[in-house]
View (cartoon, each protein chain N blue to C red):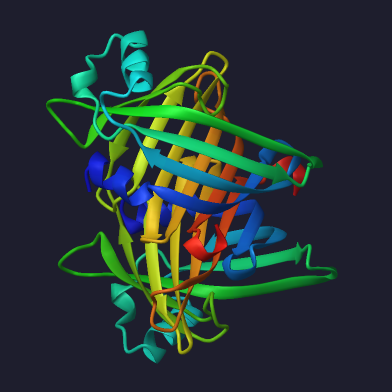
Length: 178
Length: 178
């Protein structure tokens, strides 16, 4: 699996169930959301802008994409959260199974972020991102072409302790339900 | 990581948070439990009995162990469930990163089960088990020596569709809290 295949398999609409485990207090949080992942052209101005902001040649981008989400947590059922971000993979020239992932908006903190990804033997995509006050590790893999899983860890700044572990099951939305 | 190291790291008492995603209905289930994993001797009569029941030479067993659990689901808060089982890894002679795992009691069905495990590049332990009416795939890995994660999938008999995906965060219990 290379990054282009991984993005290709991820395109589309997904219905997500996410459980967050807040480890210190043994608390659970349940989140349901709808996620959409759309391909972008390398020439798209949002891709070029994100590359430039990171001093990356836009020709080195591979399968850039755009992600939107809208959902609800059982911690605050009255509020619907939503967001979107541009993501740009930049494979390493020497080893295309690894690379950088540029994001307009991060996961642990809502600021621009640069993560380092790796595609491993079993087809999992692993992404490590250092933020100012935290670190995140995400692992995404496909069970079938219509079922994707994601484990996300939020770590303390040093990257040693895990404060929150969350698990998402993402089922491809059928056109009928759109 | 070999199976002996993996079992060694797993020994002890763990406090577990588990979230099950029942995919068809987008339902969540929250389970908290206490798990204890204890080493067994190859000569232990429970190990010998389980090997014999599976026509395995007990000398081929590696790091057999005993697991007990006690917990509660938010689907039935009045009931405490509990159980225990003997587990016996039997590494392949040609490739010790793979092997069989004999269980007195299975995960998807409470009957004796034989799974096939594999330890992969990133240190994850992957276990596939076929049952009579279902199949299970479990993936277990350590974030730190005191934090273990487990993703368990229950699949339809043919092993293609996933009906339930669950995620456990297991935090090592300190002696102070015992």
